[in-house]
Length: 132
Image (tube, rainbow, N blue to C red; front, side, top):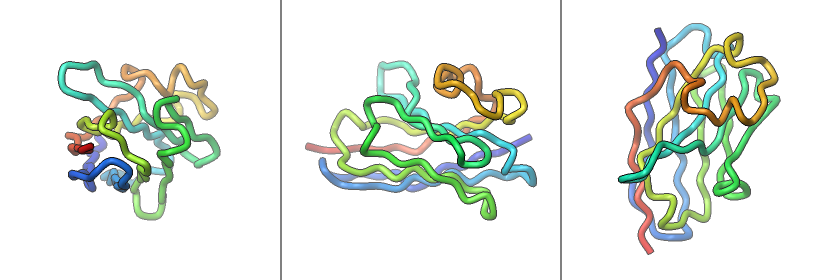
């Protein structure tokens, strides 16, 4: 089992920045692909960003490309999501999710890393609120 714990959410004004962290409890963190998803009230959960096990590949939804950066520290079992130029439409609960790279593929296509049902492990989420 893998437990994921998100932190770093909060309230910020438009144009501001936040950095989310996702800490994983597993000895094999480096074999996991990790994604960030978000869900606004009344909306479906949507993909934001993902990173493969070896950091070779990063993926971003068009809505966050150029503003968000995903990274990972395999020595500390943590994935980060740096969010800049935040806008009110970024308001949502943010979830990190993980899946073994062997299940997802070591060089997965965007359609797989962006799919909610590809991920096996999920955190509880952290709220991000952006005011105008």
